[in-house]
Length: 111
Length: 114
Image (cartoon, rainbow over the protein chains, first blue to last red):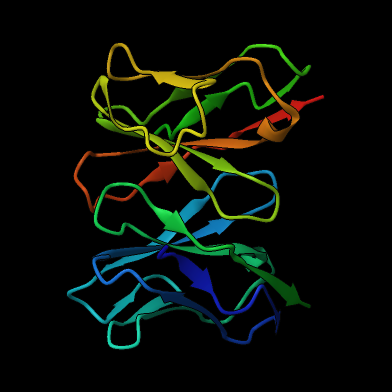
């Protein structure tokens, strides 16, 4: 079946550097994509979303890029901080209401 | 404002017992979702409510799982005859109700079946 997946299970980044987390999706009917951050023992926390009629959206220190041609989604975090250490999930809504999640990327920020 | 809340935060039970997990959505949110997250995995969809009715229960693994939302607000996920394989974090989310609305998650209930 179709699903959302992340390219790398782990990412180690130096504090202050920029982070890029990648995600591939395969459902052509998806028109809404979301990035969530999950810290240990907590529920997923909304970071940023993007609709399929856009290719870029910026938030505070975060940018999401959507490439529909190759079905690729990325999350860029500027000036990564220790508090950014967490598991990051991309999710898509497919052609209905429920979200499909990938397995996640664990980001570790080195001091 | 208040976010999604879930109780209990942790539940330990014995195999074969019945458990209930509760979710209080964000006030005014008409859509409510239950997901299950196993260790090291992303959340997996269980059931979706629009108002009081279950609009999609295709993710429930078998008939031991059931969920209700009688007044269109609080929801309860019920698991009968629990099995060790039911051990996971059960997450609840709510949204305003349209298809591309942001789903906001609660902290989850960690269920451990001994």
